[in-house]
Amino acid sequence: MLHFNLERADLFNKLAGSATFYLVILKILPNPFRALIIGSSGTIGSAFMELLKNNHACSRVVGIHRHSEYALDYQHPASIENCADSLSAEGPFQLIINTIGVLHSRDWMPEKKLEDLNADQLMAQLKINTIGPALTIRHFSKLLDPKNSIMVTLSAKVGSIEDNRLGGWYSYRAS
Ligand SMILES: NC(=O)c1ccc[n+]([C@@H]2O[C@H](COP(=O)([O-])OP(=O)(O)OC[C@H]3O[C@@H](n4cnc5c(N)ncnc54)[C@H](OP(=O)(O)O)[C@@H]3O)[C@@H](O)[C@H]2O)c1
Image 1 (cartoon, rainbow, N blue to C red):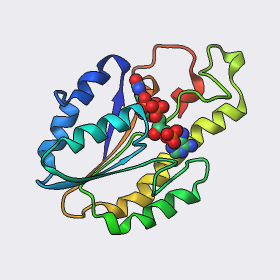
Image 2 (spheres, rainbow, N blue to C red; image 1 turned 180 degrees about the vertical axis):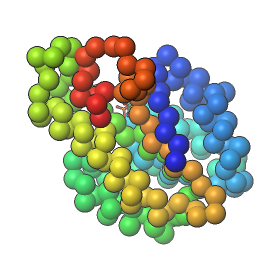
Image 3 (cartoon, rainbow, N blue to C red; image 1 turned 30 degrees about the horizontal axis):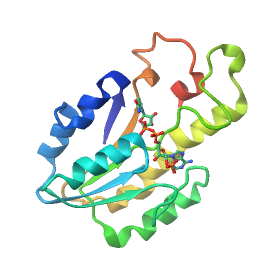
């Protein structure tokens, strides 16, 4: 299982195909390979869709999000298993990348001070950034090619325990 931390400054390089991340993946994958992007409507997810559609070794790329043909919503954990089950005929996949995650919503922004910390935001962030991805690993790993495949879940560098010199953003960084 690969787990990559992203930092906004090097995001472009990571997605441009010149960075270690993408090159490492391509070196490990068979040719041809099939890919699944979870969260394909987001900034990073749609960039991966574009990269993979233009990659000759990628014979098929499927993108899913809350409003796609095969949909999943981390506010409704049962939808994760349902979505994985409905995708079984599309597999097996040699590459699955989960880019789902939230920093803010219509109802809340990252906390700037301790007094901003609240239960609703903590629970919402944990549901989308922690519980959803964990259940996705559980239910979507059965779609992986058992011979040769990679599953990646993105997070954020600000969530690092070792590299954690900033203040604020408590619920995002904890999740
Ligand atoms: N962009 C950056 O500079 C950056 C930097 C560091 C870390 N990251 C991390 O990288 C990941 C992706 O970032 P991004 O910039 O691509 O984010 P984004 O553009 O906001 O996209 C977020 C994705 O998450 C999905 N999503 C949101 N709430 C959901 C829910 N309840 N259930 C299922 N899907 C849901 C969205 O789908 P809908 O279309 O359905 O809303 C969208 O596909 C996040 O974990 C983020 O924290 C990003």
